[in-house]
Length: 327
View (tube, rainbow, N blue to C red):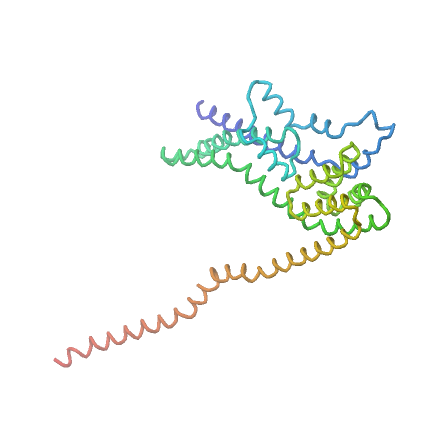
């Protein structure tokens, strides 16, 4: 009876963990809104004015938003002590919702409590209980892993997002240069380029769509561009924003400035590719030294060592045989 109850408890814990993982994966997949649809719904038309459920609808329909609201409704605070810094890191990783920081705190708390319970359930299921010291280390390590695993995921996602934006930015500048030279203003160029690069560079398309929405909402061009630089935290995009703002203030030709800067960005991308190519021999030397060099040393040195051992054994045998004859 006790064993059946323990099995039911373990199965309930595993089911709860699977439900949390499925909910997290579902929210991440459902949160990816089609950029083309968002760009097509920015124009104020009379047909879809009654169904303007863009960002607010996405926020209220999110599973994580409902979970955060339910937890806070029960009196548990999900506010982090470094809320601003946490919001900045989440925004760099692509989580720019209002409730993102609170959902991060909730996930970190759940994993910190859930992973030790899962480790304890696995140990109980295997019926192989370690010593109290080892059990304490396993549970403590699981809690530490649950505490730092969300940070690792967010940092990795932010790094991949930064690389993707940086690699696609030269192509985006070329398209923007074509639009400006064709007679479009810089505000219309953001909207047009954001529509064109939805398939090739969706992250940049989303950023440009946000800039276009902010400009249509009444924000100044400088504020919208500064917000773009803050959302990416990439020096190249910050330099682009400064270039556009200064050209706008001084009345210089934005097309000529974009042409020069686009050429510099293409050259920078080529240099980054060459740098990665030059790093390949250095990275290949590590497995060669670790795996190939010991094998080569073994092949070259073991036969002489065996021959030397046999020669020494033969010499010692001859010496032991000749000594009694001399006496």
